[in-house]
Image 1 (cartoon, rainbow over the protein chains, first blue to last red):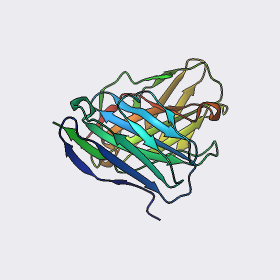
Image 2 (cartoon, rainbow over the protein chains, first blue to last red):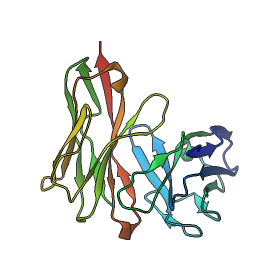
Image 3 (cartoon, rainbow over the protein chains, first blue to last red):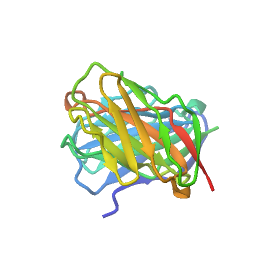
Image 4 (tube, rainbow over the protein chains, first blue to last red):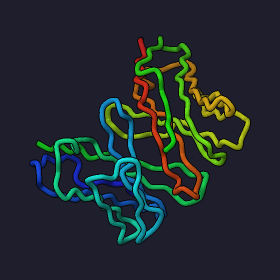
Length: 113
Length: 116
């Protein structure tokens, strides 16, 4: 049982390049989330999914797209990276049952130059 | 969107002493949860404690307890008998009801230093 894993752990992109971050969970959780963490800003929700095939926008969705084709995977895409997207990205998942908290992945540090 | 405010960017405590971290939130919803997360230098987010809004009793987990004041929308974390391993960033978080997707909103964090 690996919990929540994120691939890659580190990445450096040039402005305008694209990439996809992969989040995988093996806990059969229905809900999955993508956050970004910037200094002094806490965690901010980018997009989330309440089930396979569904996605919704969070607080800061601009410049990102997501897909949830399989229940265990949640992909975050950057079509044309910008320096403002330099951040640490966290994925999290949780069961749909109301009492359960979310479980976080280890994070991906992305630098856009 | 809900807002979560942590007004103490940094706090310090002597080892074995008690410290309280503050958190306030703004919401018009009634069915929500509140959490405190710890983030050590490893970056891994670790759940410390959670509180259901419908419960009047304050949650406790070993040395960690909360003071939940629903009317005042306040949710502070008390750490008793502080240990060196408690040094970390602490984030307060609000979780919205299922009808709005159980979205989580985080405060900006409090950096806790434990002095030996």
